Length: 370
Image 1: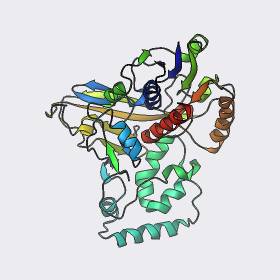
Image 2: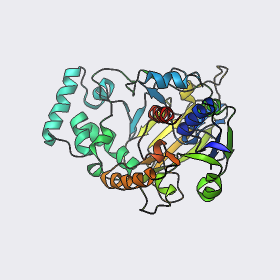
Image 3: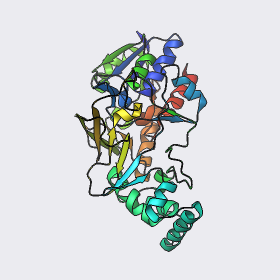
């Protein structure tokens, strides 16, 4: 009945569905959740687009991807400038001259550089072998201890000395007063929320929600020539080689009867004692206004708690260490033998993808496949 059965209505699935339909293919999209848009789903609460599965800020240097998403949504000019809260002390993220001034009282870039260099030397690091050493060589011991260590260990559930260095290599460190977290040419939030953007991608396409593909795999596979699978690759093979490791996230969301809780979209809690990693105040992604430009009288906040994934939890991001890399390669070999199935997206490819990279990967696969 269909050329493609697409499992998952997140970015990878929605892009593939849109392009396949445009190419004249018959497409059916399935999602086990009661809503489209995967982890970028935004829910309307008190006129605020709440990022139900964690904050998503679109940013890219890829013009092709930027032009592509702009077909489906207009983007606002939101710039990601999170703050860090360490036991009530507030610091600027990314690490920049505001951070260094508050931490050390330095005023010039030269002074800041000298302190970092001195602390790096005192730690005796030449070739960073893990995240801890990498962080100290980038920002020195003080900033590592206050603003990196506690947050990272909460997020990954492992000591920084056991985490690979590459995780923190993309951490922006600037000897300027630039408060923009991302080094991206294009950045923003879709006006009207991500759900609306994905709905525009899936316009005119048959979507069935609340359907668990793996539970009805045989009968569903019979409906289509090919399957595009964006779920977890190990789940597809019923974990027969063992489970890959993921991190999961739990959210506590509440509506507050006040117009402003923290004055910023994201505040990271970087001490080890605070159980949550950060608090998101969703209205500031759209400057505290509704779609008609009116100020919103209430606010919605979400506390994020990072946890080890276990069966039945929502897998959010892969733990790309050596052991999991070896296991993923074995699953990858099994996947290559499935001639009818395309595996894609963060879970299907077991990759810590940003949104723009997911879209680029889906477009690349469309070119090959269609």
